[in-house]
Structures are given as structure tokens and as C-alpha cells.
Picture 1 (cartoon, each protein chain N blue to C red):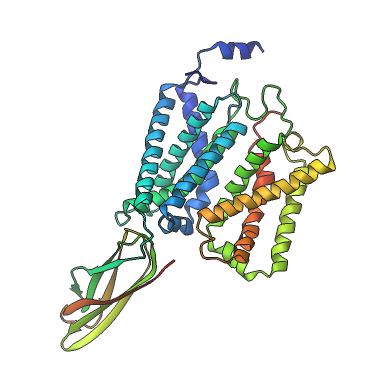
Picture 2 (cartoon, chains in turn purple, cyan):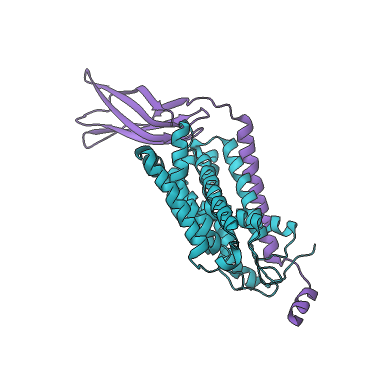
Length: 134
Length: 286
């Protein structure tokens, strides 16, 4: 009992460390809520809007490697995103595709396709994209 | 501002350390579950905001009824809850980054979504770790109050049961397995899961003699016993439904399947609402 009274009488309050942790926590939680609120205010449930582009092709050991980058400008994530890439060289066409599990809303995912038996990079273009709504 | 405690910096460091340990203990399975990472960019921002608000409410309840300091004012409870959320955000971001799930490909919204979806359970774990993993300080009375005896008040126990249910159910609610079990199981098996969950809760609360059951469970009359078991299972179903909703598992599902998923996720939730609820209050002196 005496101990308790002493404890009650003692000066009570947070120490400097506790105030620092609280301050940082406040800033983090406020920033998180603010960003989410801004995002929520501008969110319109637009379906996935994919923009695919190819990077610089590289010819290595007879294989043309083509980086592919997909950006989703919609408000809903796209799943099972398939990008089909065609290569034309020496009068013949080759097709290759890459499947990405997800492309988040306003997010970007990267992949690559490769074309074997090549002596030159040829002309490369994206011929199709497909996705499912998760 | 008047506070219920005064600690040295080393004591505070110890308390934060215990909180971080608790946060990791209770949320590591979630941090390592890819379905939870995905919800960060699959869910709409309104639902993520609602998830943050709901978690904050749950933290307030836990800190008020089972937190470290029973004599804390509402303002202190709010401060503690904000701190736990902040620590949860830092831990979740750090673990996701170390696991390679936050990289330059991720946009700002994806990063925030992933971190928030993980951090909320971490924050509840931090709260539990802070209050349960340490030794009692002078003046820190936990749930027991000055009299040293808690008579199992109904609403506080319901609130703590909800915390336990969410803490246990959250670890599996996001996974595909819950939906697979719900889809593959005939109604009779789903019913059996519900009955087993209730029997398990009844045994834990009334007959297991688990630490704290004598103080936190009212079972003087058959009616109180019955009410306790039914309420515990109802709270477990609510907790599992909340977790499934916030992890987007109800989206596009028919009512029957959604209900079956609640029962499947309700098994760990019932365990959390009964045994977990007692564990969340073990620090109270007997």
C-alpha cells in the first residue's frame, strides 16, 4: 500500500523516448491515412487499362532477349496478364509470350520474352495483351 | 498531461522490445503469406481505410480492457494505440522489404497497400506483446484492477474474445485454402466444423481449467455458461467474417459459400475467442 502511494505521488509522464516514438507513429499513421484517403477520393473503379512496351532487344548466343514492361493505368488490378510479342526477321515471323501473375492498379510489372535461333534482332512488336479481373 | 505511469528510457526500450517480439510472434505467418501481399493492391482504398479504422477500434478495446494499465485514461489508450500502429507499420515495411516484396517496381499505392494490410495484425500483436510478455510494473494492474480480481465482466470479455478471434483467424483468412475447404466440403461437414468449434470453446472455457478461466469466465449458472459459449462462437464468427471481408475473400462469392468460409475460418477464430482470450489476459495476477 505504501509502495502504491509512493508510486502515485511520483511525477508521472512519458519520457523523451516515448514522446519520440509517439511523434513518429503519429506522422506515419497520419501519412498513411492521408495517402489512402487521397487515393480513395480519386478512385473510380476503372477497369484495368494496360499499356505494354518493349525494351531494347539484345542478341546473345543466337537468342534475342526482349524486355517487356506493362503498366496498369486502371483502378483495378489485372491478373494473369499475357503479353504476346512477335519478331519478324528474314521474312519469317516468330511469336513468344510472357504471363504475369498480377499488374497492380497504377503499378508496373516487368518480364521478358526470348526468340531462339536468331542471327539478328529483327523487327519486334507487341501483338496482343490479355488479362483476367481477379 | 497526467499519465498513469513513469518509466525510465531503458524500461521503455524493454517494453517496445516486448511489443516488437509480440508483433512478430502473432503476425509472422501473415507476413509470409502472398495472398496478404496481393490484397494490398487488389482491394479498393476505401476498404483498406476501413480496415485501418477497424483495427484502431480493436486496439482501443484491447488496450482498454486487457492492456498494460487498467488505470490508464482514454487519452493514454489512444496514444498507446497510435504507437502500436506506428510500430506495426515500421515492422511490416521492414519485413516486406527484407523479403523483397517492396521494390522499385512497386508504385506508392502498392507499397502502402501491402504495408497496411500486414501492419494492422502486427499492431495487434505489438499490443498483446507489450501487455503480456513482460513482468508487472508497480502500478500496472492489467485487467485485474485494484482489487486483484476480475469477475469476468461480460462486455470486456466479449471485446477481448473478439481480439483473440481476429488474431487467430487473420492468420488463415487470407489464404486460398479456406475457400477450397469451404467449396469442397458438403454441408454436413461444415455443420460438423461449427459444432466442433462450439464444443471446443465450451470445453476450453468451462472444463479445461486453463490459467485465468476461473477469473475471466462466468459460469456460476447453466444460463451464464450457455450464454458464454454462444457469445464466444458468435464473436468468433464475427471475427472470421471481418477478416474474410477485409482480405477480399467474400468478393463475388455466393452467400452459401461465404457462410461456409466463415465457419471454416471460424475454427481458429473460436480457439482465439476462447483459449486465445484467456491467453491474452494471462498477465493479470491471480
